[in-house]
Length: 240
Ligand code: URA
Image (cartoon, rainbow, N blue to C red):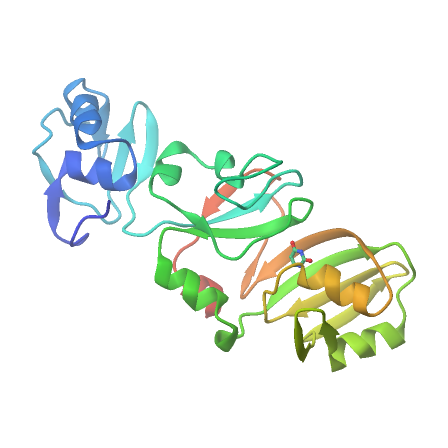
């Protein structure tokens, strides 16, 4: 899907194709029909050449900045699954525009159906590996609510380490603060299946609400409503 060299000129139909606007034929059709503008000017020749990276285009009136790699942050609402082929709930992919879906973006790790908050998605497999590898220790911050009161003994256990049912090695929270009688802020550097819920169960409590507020250096923007997304400017915005 991607141009071989995003910094070298490429034909506009290839650029549209690589950005996810449809097959080469569909993209050529859009261009010939006068539905594409490049840097504000109409382009009707599918063979016209441009450097893709950073190019501002408009397709059927929709402005779009071309990027070699797609990396976006979504405010995940409850009631969506991170799976590509969801079983019971709609996929988070439906919250993204068709060009991003066609580019094959995938979630960087998963959030449960009932978890809300910061979800990253990208079409860069190496980046997914970089951000989910336990060796890289990228911190994730979760705000959680419990049905039983939280106390210092639970916090100490979470910080020291608890054993989950699928691994004899204890997992511990990197940070844990009491934020209310029934709420905690937990920082984890791993991303095990249902990790927060299982860690709280291991200390005798039960999570009734879970929200991810930070991923590495990224903080979920206060003005990004549930269901909305925005571009992230590269790995440095996440890991520094
Ligand atoms: N831990 C969980 O239990 N669920 C999530 O969605 C994320 C982390």
